[in-house]
Each structure stands twice: as structure tokens, then as C-alpha cells.
Image 1 (cartoon, rainbow, N blue to C red):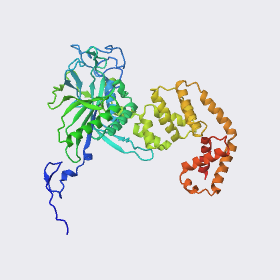
Image 2: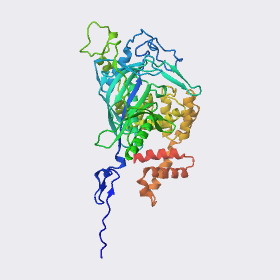
Image 3: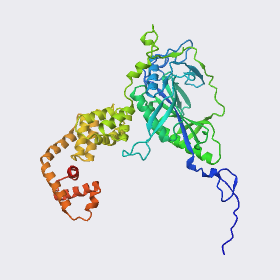
Image 4: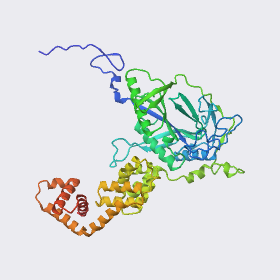
Length: 537
């Protein structure tokens, strides 16, 4: 006899908190934890590469003596007036054009009032209502952990809301030991481009992928050096969490992220924090937070439940800012008074997207390699000189540059603009290693030696001598390898067919056999010769 059907008591759905019959699932229960999605927008403050500040003639050089690059206007002395720096306007237009923005021919400046000790005037001159440019977008590859040169890269397109010119504040130096705060106004008044993105990113990796591409654009057109360690490129992140197809969640701002690593870690942590709160049916507070690099947590600075009143007002001491194109240039103005959009457009250099495409097309590089070479300042120029000075394989040279060379440079804190290693020498070293005339250990020794003392080529000279001696025996080496290959083909080795399907294992097997046949042959040298012989087959 079958067991009687037992009625199950109603249960409370953990998602909507209502009573549900056991045979009916609440629709909201289909939403899993993983369906919470982060929404990220960025505000980037990029210092403009210019010899003087946005509204004064004071110097902008980094690292100057404290309070030694401050004009009377920067210090907010009564009666001083701003005078716009033409270079800063040109840089803003350059950046807008490079990011496919619409440049507004008339823009206006506003005063943003707030009190802070390193803002002497009590307000910042910025552009809120009518910025220099609107719209635009930037397409960038997303470099996830499983990215591979064997697969095409995934891309996202991030929209831009606006680009505005504004002046930087000074710098507060907090001495906790003496319980003092000191003010350095050297940075006060330096020209900034504030680049505001649309909330088109969903994770830390997408945000840093966008930043890498943006840094590539700004450094290519020389409008910002993007040195985050010097404070010339700073990032604020606006982060919220929601379920797809539902309205966006409450936004939280994380301020003053001063490294690429901090941007990624802060965003990923904040998405996890907000998701956990929402899963517990708790409320997200609209606040401003900072990121603690030691703990990896974001910490509250102030809440935004009551919006701060910045008392925006038009800047009375600056007229509307006009830029022109060829069709609207007025007569009677001196060239020093004109910023021409069409002239700047014609002078724009090839942008990173085009440079990467050229590397893929001209040298057969995977898209991943082309991207990494272009985004690293100075690396592309060095690479082009390497592949143009010798017979080195372009893809092999790229691998050695991104691996051993860049690793040594990072350990020694070097940039490509700093090194004196000659590209033609690096090209020769790559070719010697590829032909197995030097081991990887010797290759690294040679590169370290040439980075530390470029004229000194002791190790490389020894390798050259070994190569010259090795060439004399090339015929004998090739004959031995040919014999090994023929013996393998004629053998009844049980795993022969299996080895033929796995080229790398086959080369290792044959190279070991060649070394047994003639102990003078190095393993790598034998492997290289066998690889060439197999190509012919």
C-alpha cells in the first residue's frame, strides 16, 4: 500500500518574506546571489601638462620647494584676477577630440564654494553648467585573468558625459606625530581636466581596463603624464549594485584612489559589501568613503543624505570661453587669442587603437601583445626599433620584451625613457636565445648587464664567440639531428604515432636522443635544429 500523501506546512520565502506553498516557488527566489550586478562610473582628475597654471603664470613643475610656486592669485590675495591659460584650453580640446567628444564652442566657468584649508579662496573655479565638451566614448579591451593571446580580446565601450576644465586645490600634509596639518599651495591652481564617465562598467577589472586605455590616449597626445604616484592622475569611483532590469541602486562614492591597484580593489570590495547588505535586506547609505590599502576596506568619510550646498554661481571675473573651427574664426583676432578645433584635429597623432591595429597587421602580433606594448609608455617605439634592426622574429621579440626585459625594468623601477639598452643589441640577444646559442639564464644576465652598463657587452661577446665556433660545427650538428629523425621514422617505437600528434613532446624526445648520440650537442641547440628540420617536412 502506498504511503499517504502528507501535506507540507507553508513556508516563508527568504526573498519576499511571504508564505509560499511547498509546490510553488516565489518568482523572486529565482534571483541568485550572483545576479546582483555592480554599476560603476568614474570621475578622473587629470592634471594638464603645461608650464604654468590654469589662471596664473606660476610654475607647475612637480617636486618644487614647498610654497615656492605660488602666485598672488593662487594664494587668493584680494584684488587679483584670473587669466586663462591658452595651453590648458588646447589640451582640453585635444583630449575631447581624441575621445570623440562634442566640443562646445562656448563654455562657461562657475564658482564651487566649499571650505578647506588648502583652498585659499574658499571656492574652486570649474565648469558645471556649460563644460568644454560633452558626450564621447572610449572602447577598451577587458583584461580578465583568463585572457590569452590565442583568443580575441573582449571589449567594452564606456560613454563619457563631459570634460570640464577646473583648477586644482593645494595639498594638506598631516603630521600625526606633532598633531599638525601643514599646507603646500604649489599645486593650487594647476589646470585639471575632469573626465566624467557614464556608469557603463560593472567591476574593478572593467574600470582599470578603461583607465589603462585612457592613460594610453592621454600620454599619446601629451595632455597629461598620468603619473598617479605624483598625484597628476586621480580617480573617484561611483559604485552601486542592482539586479538586471531593475532601477539602479543607491550610489556610494569612493574618493581619492591614487593607484590602479587601489581602483580595482576598492570597487570589487564595495560591490561585495553592498551586495551583502542587500541580501540581508539592509539599506545602502549614500555616503562618501575612502579606501584603506592596508585592510582592503572602504571606510566612511561623510554621508550625503543631506546634499552639500556648493552655492554654484557664474564666475564673474571670466567671460565665456570661445573656441572656433575654420568656418567660425572671426576676423581681427590675433592667432594667440584663437583655439581652432580643426587645426588641433589635424595635429592629433595616431591614437592607441590605431597603433595596436598596425602592430597586429604589420607584425602578426596577437591582439593581447599589441595592447600591452602600446599601453606601456615608450614600449612601442622601442619595439619598432628592435624589429627593424635585425632578423629577430617579431612575436618572439614581443614575448621577451613583455617577459624578461619588462620584469627586470620593473624590479629596478625603470621606464623605457630611462634605459640606455640599444634596441639593436636587444634584438641580437633575442635572436641568439631563439637559436639556442644562450640559455634563458644567460639571456637574463646579458639584459641585466646591458641595462646597468650599456657599453659593457662582456657576456654578449662570449655568446658571440660561442656562436662563431658553433657555426663551424653546424653541418655536423645538422647531420646528427637528421640521423636521429630518420631513425625515429624507421623505428617501431610503440608511442611513435602518439608523439607525432604532440609536437613539443616529440621535439623533447628527439633532442634527448640527439644529445645521447653526440654529447657535445646542447639540448636547446639540438631542439632548435630539429624544429627547423621538422618545418621542412
